[in-house]
Length: 191
Image (cartoon, rainbow, N blue to C red; front, side):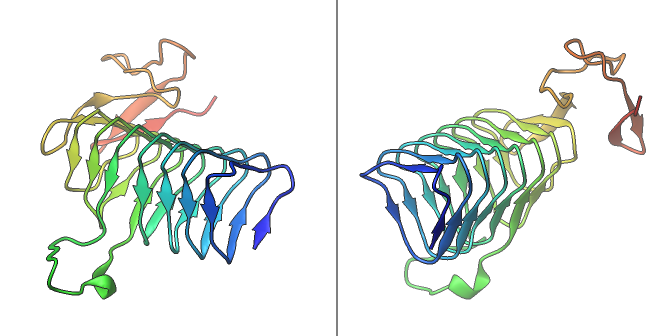
Protein backbone atom coordinates (compact mmCIF):
# COMPACT_ATOMS: atom_id res chain seq x y z
CA UNK A 1 0.00 0.00 0.00
CA UNK A 2 1.32 3.43 -0.91
CA UNK A 3 -0.34 6.22 1.06
CA UNK A 4 1.52 9.50 0.78
CA UNK A 5 2.47 10.81 4.25
CA UNK A 6 0.65 14.09 3.55
CA UNK A 7 -2.65 12.31 2.82
CA UNK A 8 -5.37 12.22 5.49
CA UNK A 9 -7.45 9.09 6.07
CA UNK A 10 -10.14 9.37 8.75
CA UNK A 11 -9.97 6.69 11.45
CA UNK A 12 -13.40 5.35 10.43
CA UNK A 13 -12.37 4.88 6.77
CA UNK A 14 -11.07 1.59 5.35
CA UNK A 15 -8.24 1.40 2.81
CA UNK A 16 -7.57 -2.06 1.39
CA UNK A 17 -4.22 -3.23 0.05
CA UNK A 18 -2.77 -2.67 -2.46
CA UNK A 19 -3.76 0.85 -3.46
CA UNK A 20 -2.15 4.23 -4.05
CA UNK A 21 -3.23 7.50 -2.44
CA UNK A 22 -1.52 10.70 -3.56
CA UNK A 23 -0.25 13.73 -1.65
CA UNK A 24 -2.70 15.93 0.27
CA UNK A 25 -5.67 13.71 -0.55
CA UNK A 26 -8.33 13.59 2.16
CA UNK A 27 -10.56 10.57 2.76
CA UNK A 28 -13.39 11.20 5.19
CA UNK A 29 -15.75 9.31 7.50
CA UNK A 30 -16.86 5.78 6.62
CA UNK A 31 -15.24 5.81 3.16
CA UNK A 32 -13.94 2.54 1.71
CA UNK A 33 -11.11 2.38 -0.82
CA UNK A 34 -10.89 -1.14 -2.26
CA UNK A 35 -7.79 -2.90 -3.56
CA UNK A 36 -6.07 -1.86 -6.78
CA UNK A 37 -7.48 1.66 -6.67
CA UNK A 38 -5.32 4.66 -7.53
CA UNK A 39 -6.19 8.10 -6.17
CA UNK A 40 -4.18 11.13 -7.28
CA UNK A 41 -3.00 14.20 -5.41
CA UNK A 42 -5.26 16.76 -3.76
CA UNK A 43 -8.47 14.73 -3.93
CA UNK A 44 -11.34 14.76 -1.46
CA UNK A 45 -13.50 11.68 -0.88
CA UNK A 46 -16.51 12.61 1.24
CA UNK A 47 -18.40 10.59 3.80
CA UNK A 48 -19.52 7.10 2.79
CA UNK A 49 -17.68 7.13 -0.56
CA UNK A 50 -16.74 3.72 -1.97
CA UNK A 51 -14.05 3.46 -4.66
CA UNK A 52 -12.87 0.27 -6.28
CA UNK A 53 -11.63 -2.23 -6.87
CA UNK A 54 -9.66 -1.25 -9.98
CA UNK A 55 -10.77 2.40 -10.06
CA UNK A 56 -8.57 5.31 -11.17
CA UNK A 57 -9.11 8.81 -9.76
CA UNK A 58 -6.96 11.64 -11.14
CA UNK A 59 -5.58 14.65 -9.30
CA UNK A 60 -7.78 17.30 -7.65
CA UNK A 61 -11.04 15.35 -7.87
CA UNK A 62 -13.88 16.08 -5.46
CA UNK A 63 -16.22 13.19 -4.72
CA UNK A 64 -19.10 14.23 -2.50
CA UNK A 65 -20.92 12.07 0.08
CA UNK A 66 -22.56 8.72 -0.77
CA UNK A 67 -20.93 8.08 -4.17
CA UNK A 68 -19.84 4.59 -5.26
CA UNK A 69 -17.18 4.27 -7.97
CA UNK A 70 -17.18 0.72 -9.30
CA UNK A 71 -14.59 -1.24 -11.27
CA UNK A 72 -14.07 0.38 -14.65
CA UNK A 73 -14.69 3.97 -13.57
CA UNK A 74 -11.89 6.34 -14.57
CA UNK A 75 -11.99 9.94 -13.38
CA UNK A 76 -9.49 12.21 -15.08
CA UNK A 77 -8.05 15.25 -13.26
CA UNK A 78 -10.38 17.84 -11.73
CA UNK A 79 -13.65 15.86 -11.83
CA UNK A 80 -16.47 16.85 -9.46
CA UNK A 81 -18.99 14.14 -8.45
CA UNK A 82 -22.01 15.61 -6.68
CA UNK A 83 -23.65 14.00 -3.65
CA UNK A 84 -25.27 10.62 -4.25
CA UNK A 85 -24.53 10.51 -7.97
CA UNK A 86 -24.61 6.96 -9.31
CA UNK A 87 -22.32 4.99 -11.62
CA UNK A 88 -23.74 1.68 -12.86
CA UNK A 89 -21.42 -1.20 -13.73
CA UNK A 90 -23.48 -3.53 -15.99
CA UNK A 91 -26.25 -2.79 -18.49
CA UNK A 92 -28.66 -5.60 -17.62
CA UNK A 93 -28.23 -6.55 -13.95
CA UNK A 94 -30.00 -9.53 -12.39
CA UNK A 95 -29.55 -10.70 -8.83
CA UNK A 96 -29.49 -14.35 -9.92
CA UNK A 97 -27.08 -13.91 -12.86
CA UNK A 98 -23.36 -13.33 -12.25
CA UNK A 99 -22.15 -10.55 -14.58
CA UNK A 100 -18.84 -9.41 -13.07
CA UNK A 101 -17.12 -10.14 -16.39
CA UNK A 102 -19.49 -7.66 -18.11
CA UNK A 103 -18.45 -4.50 -16.22
CA UNK A 104 -18.02 -1.67 -18.73
CA UNK A 105 -15.51 1.16 -18.61
CA UNK A 106 -16.89 4.61 -17.81
CA UNK A 107 -14.46 7.47 -18.46
CA UNK A 108 -15.11 10.95 -17.08
CA UNK A 109 -13.01 13.62 -18.80
CA UNK A 110 -10.88 16.30 -17.22
CA UNK A 111 -12.79 19.00 -15.33
CA UNK A 112 -16.23 17.41 -15.79
CA UNK A 113 -19.00 18.03 -13.25
CA UNK A 114 -21.70 15.51 -12.33
CA UNK A 115 -24.63 16.95 -10.38
CA UNK A 116 -26.28 15.51 -7.28
CA UNK A 117 -28.29 12.32 -7.79
CA UNK A 118 -27.35 12.04 -11.48
CA UNK A 119 -26.95 8.53 -12.91
CA UNK A 120 -24.18 7.63 -15.35
CA UNK A 121 -24.97 4.39 -17.19
CA UNK A 122 -21.81 2.34 -17.65
CA UNK A 123 -20.02 2.22 -20.98
CA UNK A 124 -20.56 5.92 -21.68
CA UNK A 125 -17.89 8.61 -21.67
CA UNK A 126 -18.22 12.15 -20.38
CA UNK A 127 -16.16 14.69 -22.31
CA UNK A 128 -13.81 17.16 -20.73
CA UNK A 129 -15.39 20.09 -18.88
CA UNK A 130 -18.94 18.86 -19.54
CA UNK A 131 -21.64 19.40 -16.93
CA UNK A 132 -24.33 16.86 -16.05
CA UNK A 133 -27.34 18.44 -14.33
CA UNK A 134 -28.63 17.18 -11.00
CA UNK A 135 -30.89 14.14 -11.38
CA UNK A 136 -30.00 13.58 -15.06
CA UNK A 137 -29.64 10.05 -16.44
CA UNK A 138 -26.76 9.74 -18.91
CA UNK A 139 -27.46 6.96 -21.42
CA UNK A 140 -24.97 7.95 -24.14
CA UNK A 141 -21.65 9.74 -24.52
CA UNK A 142 -21.56 13.42 -23.51
CA UNK A 143 -19.56 15.82 -25.68
CA UNK A 144 -16.82 18.01 -24.21
CA UNK A 145 -18.20 21.30 -22.75
CA UNK A 146 -21.81 20.07 -23.15
CA UNK A 147 -24.44 20.97 -20.56
CA UNK A 148 -26.85 18.03 -20.31
CA UNK A 149 -29.99 17.57 -18.23
CA UNK A 150 -33.10 15.42 -18.05
CA UNK A 151 -34.11 11.78 -18.31
CA UNK A 152 -32.56 10.67 -20.55
CA UNK A 153 -29.94 13.42 -20.53
CA UNK A 154 -29.94 15.72 -23.57
CA UNK A 155 -27.68 18.65 -24.42
CA UNK A 156 -29.35 21.93 -23.43
CA UNK A 157 -26.36 24.20 -23.92
CA UNK A 158 -22.63 24.64 -23.58
CA UNK A 159 -20.44 25.49 -20.58
CA UNK A 160 -16.95 26.96 -20.31
CA UNK A 161 -13.98 25.43 -18.53
CA UNK A 162 -14.97 27.43 -15.45
CA UNK A 163 -18.49 25.92 -15.53
CA UNK A 164 -20.35 29.03 -16.66
CA UNK A 165 -23.19 28.61 -19.15
CA UNK A 166 -22.36 30.10 -22.53
CA UNK A 167 -24.79 32.23 -24.51
CA UNK A 168 -24.85 32.56 -28.32
CA UNK A 169 -21.61 34.59 -28.26
CA UNK A 170 -19.74 31.54 -26.88
CA UNK A 171 -17.67 33.84 -24.65
CA UNK A 172 -17.26 32.85 -21.01
CA UNK A 173 -18.79 35.59 -18.83
CA UNK A 174 -16.31 34.84 -16.01
CA UNK A 175 -12.98 34.51 -17.81
CA UNK A 176 -13.52 35.96 -21.29
CA UNK A 177 -12.37 32.71 -22.90
CA UNK A 178 -13.77 32.31 -26.39
CA UNK A 179 -15.18 29.14 -27.92
CA UNK A 180 -16.31 28.08 -31.37
CA UNK A 181 -18.71 25.31 -32.44
CA UNK A 182 -17.32 23.06 -35.19
CA UNK A 183 -19.27 20.07 -36.53
CA UNK A 184 -21.43 19.86 -33.39
CA UNK A 185 -18.48 20.05 -30.97
CA UNK A 186 -17.32 23.02 -28.92
CA UNK A 187 -13.66 24.02 -29.03
CA UNK A 188 -11.86 26.61 -26.93
CA UNK A 189 -9.94 29.19 -28.93
CA UNK A 190 -6.33 29.47 -27.80
CA UNK A 191 -5.00 32.95 -27.01
